[in-house]
Image 1: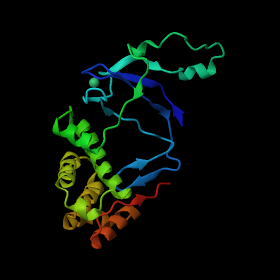
Image 2: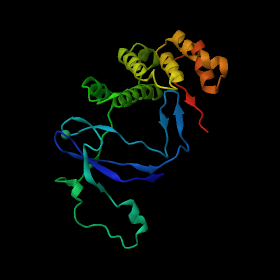
Image 3: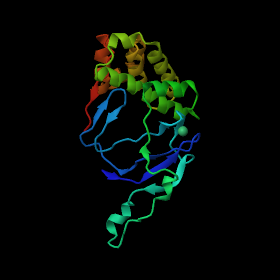
Image 4: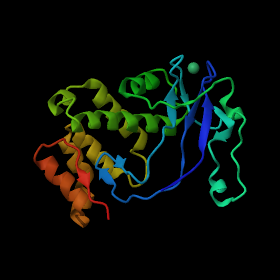
Length: 227
Ligand SMILES: [Zn+2]
């Protein structure tokens, strides 16, 4: 993995500055992909796109609008520059602060709050938040902090999946994933209906797995083999 620059962002409400790393390139070596599209890739870490200010609780996107000019740390190109000497004076991107903490990732409740407060500016933002929320629920299943039978009764979980379905069902190539989302909420008939064209033509391993789990009335996320 080649790390990219560490950028600095300012909370739009109280101006508290936070840093967020970036990567220049990474790979999926040793990665695990799940059927809810989450990828756990040690060689390609993902950094938050949205954060919550630890001082004033404001939720804000880490993008060009909140970015402060300049970066933290030694520039990547300095590695190839024998004459490079670090600047001894305080980095101007720190503003009045002596130090800067990393931007916080939103936790499950903060993602729900963000959606409730409509911080999404367009459909892409909303999709991003809804995927984060889906994965947050499923991570709870993985680490055992919630049981599947309790999640099945959770109206927020179902509502999030329905909203996600609304956002993506028109997207090209999304049919199999829509089938999977329907399986997560136990709508097995709808899942079969969406899978049908793929089952007849060619039953790849992913379609096969969704199909078998659907037959068994199983709603769990599964790991996908990636080459
Ligand atoms: Zn703030």
